[in-house]
Image (cartoon, rainbow, N blue to C red; front, side, top):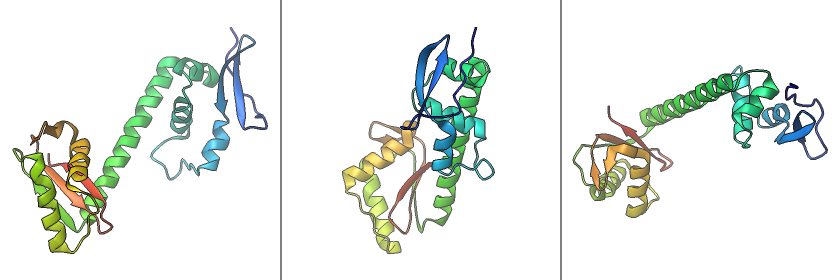
Length: 178
């Protein structure tokens, strides 16, 4: 069985084909060029080069099996690489949110049991006191908090304590207070 091997050269449109047994399996962007274009640097990233490569292909709807063939590995290994990459991205996002929360001049503690409809006024009051402008209507702010809180908000009820931070630029960040 012939393995899927990405070609060295790409077409004039920047696409390369993966071929198996002489037929086109998938069309992918030249991943190496893409990673270079967007400035991926494995020395400064939380992702390895292989993790970035797999995520780039998966974001282009290339199957794990096709990626495995192209990289000369198993689908299970590609799945593991993708899972690790997504976990690393999630941890990086959490780290950024934590750092922003530390710097935010406004931090509002929202206790469990609080009605979601009361949260915007709590945030507006704290922002007024700190001289920070938050550029969201009450419904928008409720949606931001609810979406970011996930399972910490059930219906209109905050079920897990939250910290709502607002940066000096008015960006709202929500963290679970676990």
